[in-house]
Length: 88
Image 1 (cartoon, rainbow, N blue to C red):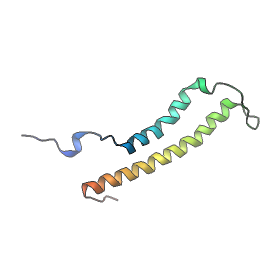
Image 2 (image 1 turned 90 degrees about the horizontal axis):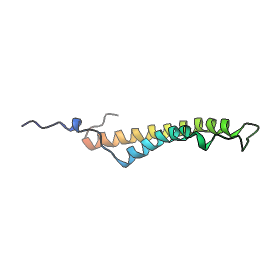
Image 3 (image 1 turned 90 degrees about the vertical axis):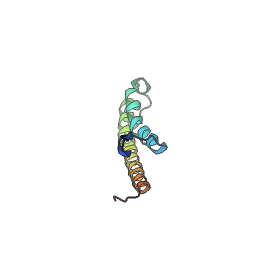
Image 4 (image 1 turned 30 degrees about the horizontal axis):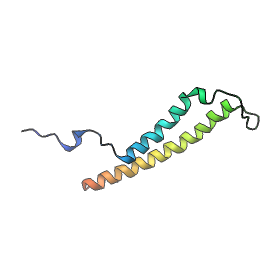
């Protein structure tokens, strides 16, 4: 009688989307697990571990977000090509 259109079936979980999610979740897990970096040693150029570990994650998070964005773009291009349309 009434069939649901393709778009309303929900999100599809693919290996690429799992990698994207891991790239975006990793910084949160690293920063929320305070016990892993709540110490002063080792010191790097006079900065205690507690501080330089967090600053390192700022750079790591930037890189992981860029990777996730590029993978998302690739996934969207592949999905639009599979549907037969080229939106970009």
